[in-house]
Each structure stands twice: as C-alpha cells, then as structure tokens.
Length: 165
Image (cartoon, rainbow, N blue to C red; front, side, top):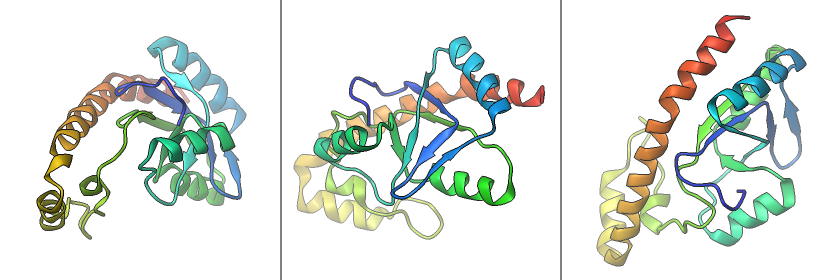
C-alpha cells in the first residue's frame, strides 16, 4: 500500500493486480474515470487483489514496492476476474481504511462468519488473550467508519458517470 495515504482517501482504479496477472478495464471507461478522479479529488492507480489481509507495515510496504499498487483489498481481484470472463469493463472504488502505517492487531484478523458478520466470540477471545490491542481496535473502527463515510459522495459521482454510458 502506498505510503502517505490516510483513512478516508478515495481510490478509483481501472487496474487490478494479483500474484500472476494484471487486469485493465476498457479504454473508454478509463478515460471517463480519469475525469472523475480530478472531479472528486480521488487517487488513481492499481489495486492489489490480495489473497489475505496484509497486517503489518512491512507486508504493506512490500506489496507497494513489488507491485506498484497503491491500495490492497481482497475483493477487487474477484470483480476483475469476473468482468474479464464476461468481457465487460470494471471500476474499483475504495476508501483507505487502514493506512500503510497501521499494524493490524490479531482480533482484526479474525475471519468473518459465513454470513459476512464479525465472528464476535472469536474477536472477544482474542481481546481477552491480548487486551492491549483494544486501543488499536478502536482506532481501526474509527478509521473504517471514516472510510465508509468518505465513499458516499464519490459513489454518487461514479453512478452519474456510469449512467452517461
């Protein structure tokens, strides 16, 4: 993840990278997204589709250094693969939730349950084992909320751009 990005910074991308492939969206969409990037003050660049959460500063730096990706997530590569298989363009709209300087505590790495909700029992067990991670968890929650709020305006702007297609 690119150093210097802050929670709530908006990423718009038409390029996704994973371990063995790079996906680019269609040229017509890329030119419209470049205009939108300027309009909403987003940051444009490739997103790394990771297979697992990058929890340490070193892992995030290494991902940025090795791939040039400015942000990392677990979902964008799935969307890029599906779009490529269907022959349709894609766009990634993300907000930074945990910056390159944030080390994720063990409780934040507990996988979601099958229904996509936090596995509360396992999170609480992790906190009980290492209560010193609580302040970091609260900071992470605040930054995640900030990131979600930051997405509202850009999501509406992206919808307007795509509706003109």
